[in-house]
Amino acid sequence: MKLFKLVFVLGMLLSLASCGSDDDICESGLSSPRMKLKFKDSSNKLYQPDTLIIGVKLTGEENIKTVVSALKPDSVLVPLRVDDTNFTDLYISTSAKGTPSKVRVLYTPVSEYVSPACGMRRLYNDLSAVLENATPVKNIELNEKNIHDENKTHLYLIF
Image 1 (cartoon, rainbow, N blue to C red):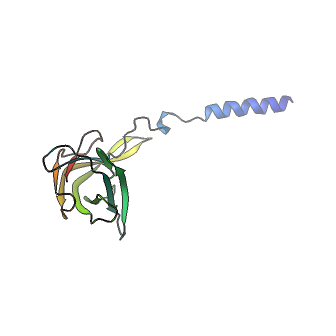
Image 2 (cartoon, helix red, strand yellow; image 1 turned 90 degrees about the vertical axis):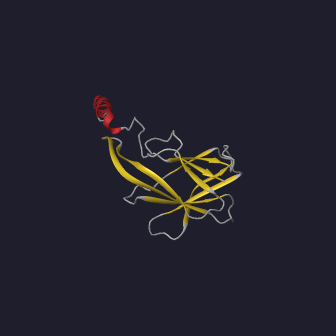
């Protein structure tokens, strides 16, 4: 019984001593920011589409992968590519069967070291966008040149 107590106490001490340091936990929450999109109508007023579907094409894939599917959104957060490509193609539709608008978002990707626990995050500078198919999106309006956080609206889609 004494041996059991000794092993138990040593096991407890070992488990307490093996807990990780603060370097093991990413507390800052800093990660690669997503691009925030908001919407306007042709009279330049904020707009909420009834349905919004946003897809992207991944490297080497032929199919469009849906990243946002929302009803009456006032804004959406869209992830951008984290590889060394300097653009992300967005396919934006207001119905599952409609022809999507293609928006090519161009940027200069840079990596930033956060901490040992969080590692690196990807930031996007010199943002621009080109509308390649103007149905249902009629125009785009750039609001921010850099994507460093998700709180600011980076791009307005005009329907």
